[in-house]
Each structure stands twice: as C-alpha cells, then as structure tokens.
Image (tube, rainbow, N blue to C red):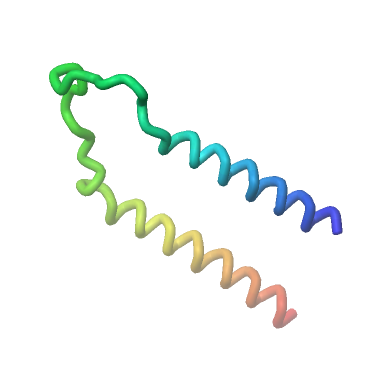
Length: 68
C-alpha cells in the first residue's frame, strides 16, 4: 500500500513540474538574445544506446532472479 502511495505522489509531482516547465513565457524575448541552438540530434544515438543497455540489464537481472 505504501509503495502505491509513493508512486502516485511521485507521478503527480513529476506531472505538475513538467507542466510548469512547458508553460509559455508571458513576455516576448527578442530573437537576437537566444544564441545558437543546441544540437541534440548529434548524440541521440548514444542516448538510445545507453537506454537500451539499461533496459537489457534490468530485464536480464529480473529474469535471472525469477529463474533462481
């Protein structure tokens, strides 16, 4: 029961923090103050590789624990 409450509270917290992060800025910012854009697509393959490795290791350890 306690685990469910913690997960629910965490979900609500992260939901509200991400909603506030995507809120629009009420004042207009001039285009020349933004600076260069960040190239996230250059290293997206590395992020995907780390994610797949993490998923593989988690499921493998879970499967080994179930078979033991």
